[in-house]
Image (spheres, rainbow, N blue to C red):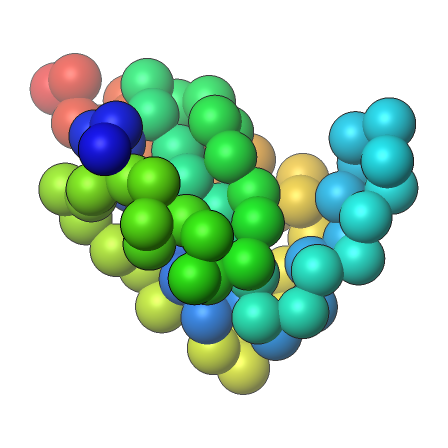
Length: 80
């Protein structure tokens, strides 16, 4: 099991911009060192990653750009 800094959980619909252009329902994003390391269904991420902090995204409407900016800001604050 790989350890990550942050899990963004309970994403109702996630549309990826990877080559597969996947649409994932009940998705989770795993973040480590300020970078996305995985995005998949909740069950798959729960089996593969242990987490330091979880953010609940249920009911939120976010664009990936906003999420990236939020993660960058959190990383800066964490460094002090």
